[in-house]
Amino acid sequence: MKIQRLILFCSLGIFSYSCQKCELVEQTITDPIIVDTMPTCEGVFYASQAAPGIDLSFFFNEFNKPITVPFEYAEGPGPNPVGTLIYNFESNFSAYDSIGQQYVFEYYYTNGGPVEVLFYHQSITTGASTFTSPMTAYAAPVFLNGFLYAIQLDSGNPSVLYQIIQLDPLTGQNLGLMHSGYVTANSPFTEISMSSTSNGKDKIYFLSGTTLIEFNVENLVANEIDLDPTFHPIDNVVQFFGLEYKRDEGLLIAMKNRFDTVTPARTDLVSIEPAFSTATVTQLLDITGNLPAGQDGQINPEFYSTTFDQCDNTYYITEMQGNDPFTTNLFEIDLEGKILKPYLFDGYWYGLDFANL
Image 1 (cartoon, rainbow, N blue to C red):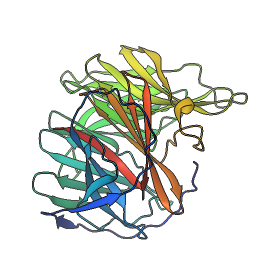
Image 2 (spheres, rainbow, N blue to C red):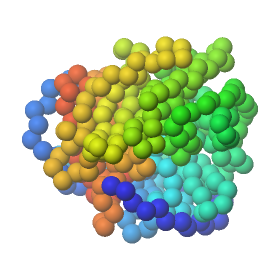
Image 3 (cartoon, rainbow, N blue to C red):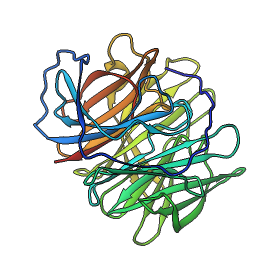
């Protein structure tokens, strides 16, 4: 679903909220009859939900895995003002830290001028939440070993300067440069289409278009990898997004959108195995072919978020489905059984992250 972006900006300061008690909310969801072959793995999903009828606010919610029918979730702090319409910001710029029990989301948007950033921090243990306005813009925050990182781009011609930085996880402020380099991308390499993940040990990854950057935080070495050298802006338009990491096999997992002048647009779930300057890309599931009847042919790369459960190797996607009223698709993809299970939630949910119990 392609939705025109609206532009609205409001001045923002610093806000602090706390929530010691959450309200349990029950919601009816669309749940098709599918045989569940996945092992029982428990955990908690964290996500933001746009406040009903208030585009400029959101609630920070959580719900359990296995997902209940009817759907139940705990409504947390909110409504929290963000000062921009949901059509303006990137919906996948969230990160969760299991060490510090903290969740962050970067509201990255523009009113036609310079990029604005509003940084949201939520403590899972205390319930306290804060907003700050960092001095500089960046993209795709990611935690590794309790530290928060992100990437900045300075587009040039033909090369793009990228900088990997460390952030203060409480305020989102830039703590210092980790690495800088140039990449010559044969497809659009932009901050707004960036996704990120870590291997949980020593590496973080950033992905945009067909370009993957692998960075080792210990030896400060980076590799730039072109995942599809055959990209063409007309005959072979390819975009990778929704980056996650599958630890038991040491593989990256992502979605791949593709369309050209002959074949319809489609989305596949793929694995990516980096090897220095190259990578092996393997199809895992035809997402388009497994979507419910009436769905668009591909996952919307603008209004989406992803997360991954290492316990049972399950990949999760949220995607805006409708805007009058707002509804959200949640797709649960079992990589072992090759099963896609769809849910439909009321409201707009974004910034999805998962924590194992």
